[in-house]
Image (cartoon, rainbow, N blue to C red; front, side):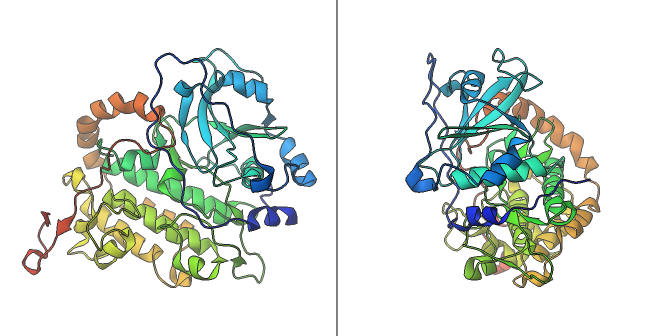
Length: 419
């Protein structure tokens, strides 16, 4: 029997104070050559994050499982939060790599045992204690192959930490916008895995869950490029019974949030579907949802892409030119059609995530491109593995989005010319 993912009334209050803000990501961290200790974790602030004593019922709920670590255990597991083990920064705070016993009972010698990611609440971060509480509560009740696994947490004094399984390939964002090109078949597999994760939240969990912050940086990849959703601090229960939506303060990341949600604060599962459409466009094009480095009028990915979505004569204008034609033409056309359905203005006309999963699973086979893609990229990708794992949660390298194109009337139907 599936565990309940329902939040208590106190949980609604926990999430109600959220406000719209972009994700906080750091640039690449410069690692010191001989430093034994990095910056210590930052304590929460009573002023910014509301009471440090959480809702008693919810604390008892999350305390039953998974493991509750002491702060000292996690300090030892991360080698006193060394900068060499800093994976990146998020709205929550810094994330470090650590090692624990397979049983999760105590720290072990670095490089042995089970690798984990340890996220520390930052009092100056976008997210706070209440989001920490919501994230732990949701992840302990939700179990699916496309959701990141919660290993444990720490709630000691003012300290708030979360321990996750370590995702060796980092985030999808880390791969899409780098110089090393992600192969077509891998992109589609990632899209399918992420879609399956959302479908589980919407339709398979005992209570419907709205993820509310679906974006490339929240899709983490394991060693085999299997996609898993992470960061549930903004998630909340979906509408039930006669309810058509959930009214809430607008929160999310600009460029991904559904327009009707931004305008009205009415949140539904179809809000997540819109966000999936944006990420699918990023996967297809190699462009960011919002990118001011693009030509004037092309900063917003959705606005730029809409004229070509589902157009069998011009859909290829949306495909990442770095793939150099190594993609399924029928599959790419179908993907643009799926994105078009997800991005419909009327949320009622958008498909359910289970329908999107079915459409992605019916895509024409891309096996003919697999060998060529793997051979042309394997050396470069493997050479970057250590680099990617060391920057798990932050985008790295220069902006690798494709150059802008100019399409004149004479060029319509032909490959555009780089400007």
